[in-house]
Image 1 (spheres, rainbow, N blue to C red):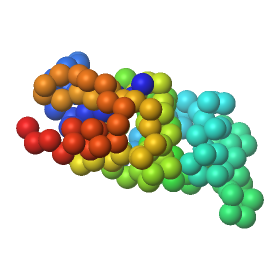
Image 2 (image 1 turned 180 degrees about the horizontal axis):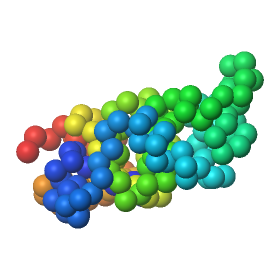
Image 3 (image 1 turned 45 degrees about the horizontal axis):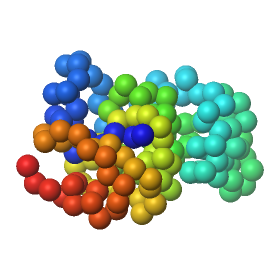
Length: 151
């Protein structure tokens, strides 16, 4: 299940001091994650962007069936792929739309954060971590309340 942190400090204080925090998902995807792409990316690329992964660095656009470089994926799709392929990295989700958030919140592993609530209406359960510790939340209203709770 995905783990949500309110901010980077809650993550780095619980993990190694040299942990990677990704704030610019486009750059991280283009330079790191794109090299890791395999068949696991197909479903995510299709669900979020409606594109088809044709080969490791090429996608077929849903708009005009054009073959494009993989760096043309949306930022939300790149963010989801960053979470999938880099579960040891803390990924900022602030640039994601609802379709990407739904995919990310359904992942089996990964760590995400945002300074403000980014919650899809449809999710099973997530682990949340803050200065008080960890808990499992499976309700939209509870998660929104947790996220808006001031330290």
